[in-house]
Image 1 (cartoon, one colour):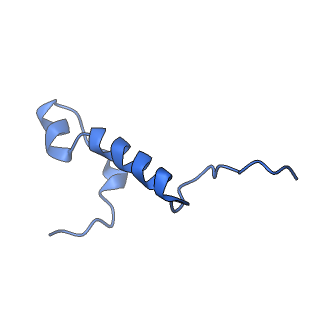
Image 2 (tube, helix red, strand yellow):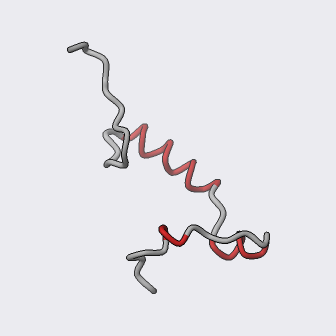
Image 3 (cartoon, helix red, strand yellow):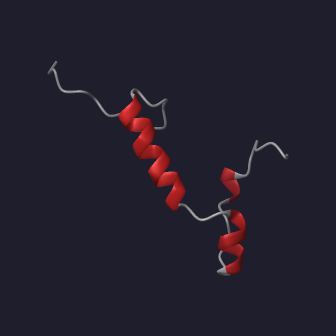
Length: 54
């Protein structure tokens, strides 16, 4: 085995603060469900499963 850090192929918890910051910046760029509907696009229904209503 090499000393290189393996990147998981599926979703996982962030492993450090730098990764958390990067993920936060990516999420800021994502369109909301309402924004997608205004653009006449359909939000991904898989992302809605299990989401709590507030």
